[in-house]
Structures are given as C-alpha cells and as structure tokens.
Amino acid sequence: GQQLNQSPQSMFIQEGEDVSMNCTSSSIFNTWLWYKQDPGEGPVLLIALYKAGELTSNGRLTAQFGITRKDSFLNISASIPSDVGIYFCAGQRADKLIFGTGTRLQVFP
Amino acid sequence: EAQVTQNPRYLITVTGKKLTVTCSQNMNHEYMSWYRQDPGLGLRQIYYSMNVEVTDKGDVPEGYKVSRKEKRNFPLILESPSPNQTSLYFCASSLSGTAYHEQYFGPGTRLTVT
Image 1 (spheres, helix red, strand yellow):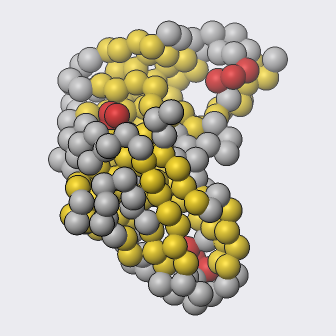
Image 2 (cartoon, chains in turn purple, red):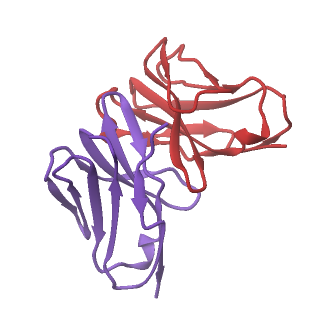
C-alpha cells in the first residue's frame, strides 16, 4: 500500500529551538492532517488542512498544505519537553487515510 | 467521556491460535477502522467500516477479518495468527466516512505472536 515520505525520521533538539518536518507524496490529497503520538497512546489530531496553500496555526504549531497538493509541512516553535513524541502526517483522498512513517522528536532541557 | 476502547491492551499468543481484539466507541460514530503500527512504517490501514454491515479492505488486510454487526463495535479477528502479525494495533472512529479530521484513536493493543 502507499505510504507518505516523511522527514526527518528523528530529531534531537534543545528546549526552546524551532522544529520543522515535512511530508511528500507522489499523489494528490484533498486533506492533510498532522497527528502526535505520545508513548503508549494512540495518535491525537493536531492540525487539519483542507485547501492547497492553506496555512494554519494551533498555538506553537503551524502547518501548511502545499500548493501542488502533494506535500505538507509542520513547524513547532519554541519547543518544550512535552513536545516529545512521534509526529505523523496523513493524507486523505476519497475514503482512504494514508499515514507517513513518522518523525520521532526528542527535546532536551 | 467520549472514547474508543480496545481490549486487551497487551496479548501474547502462539502461532495458529485464533484471537479477537475488541474495539468499542461511545460517540455514535459511523466510520471505524483498524490500523497496525510497525517501526519505520507508520500506521497502515487493515480494514475499515463506513457503517453497520459495511466493511472494506485497507492496505494490509491479509490474515485479518472484521465484522460490524453493531454501530459501536468493530472487532478485529485473527483466525490463525502468525509471527509477522506481531505489531501494535489501533482502532479508530469518526463521525462519518468523509470526516477523517475527526478520527479518534483507541489506546492501542500490543500483540506478540510466538
């Protein structure tokens, strides 16, 4: 089955730094979603994007739906220790939701 | 409290011994889905259900069965588990099949097949 290319695979940053991660696909999607998974829990939705070019913020998180509809990025500003986790992008097309491979984020004090 | 529950949370079994992982949601959601999560592969969809008595294959359905006899329940059945089905499984639900942005995930079931 199709998967989205998500990078980087992992990041080790210091508290207070900004973080960027992105997701690319060879196919077009109608919706891009970003989820966060804390250890031992299921993914939780962070941001949903519905239109090409859309830029949406949720607190310190900002995500964009690429103009080509084949990519998306997520930025986290001024990282804090509770940002630790795995971040997944997901593209939605028709009745299918395709997930990226995940970016594991570690934040050091 | 609105939630998706899965049972069991942890399961160790042997090859060939049939097992069922239950999933239940209390939000009156029409759409339910099962995913498996493996290191480096993200989440991959196994089966999904748009409504009662309607189920469809996802990307990795081989070796799995599902049923949707009631709106709230969507059990995942492994008729003859094999070691390559060792994984972390998530059930999810959303209001409708077109509203994926509202997809709620359960806490996960970690399955080990020896």
